[in-house]
Image 1 (cartoon, one colour):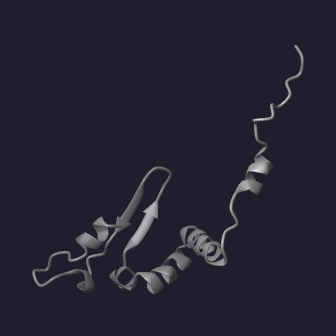
Image 2 (cartoon, one colour; image 1 turned 90 degrees about the horizontal axis):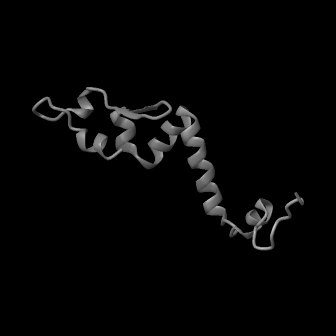
Length: 95
């Protein structure tokens, strides 16, 4: 069999990277912070304190394994209403 040669319409992966649009400085910083906050719990808490202060003070914890993501909201005074029920159900449901 003759060796196969790439056709002209097939693109090289390196060339596809060159065709991507350049990201602005803001987009690169946003991607860096997003990646940092998903890798490390400390930076996740710092980002939560800055952009989601109610979620930070409620004490919500995110945990995950290979296929499952969980959010746990502790039963604290900040999360309870006058009837001693959980007030953060909407917050937990929107995570």
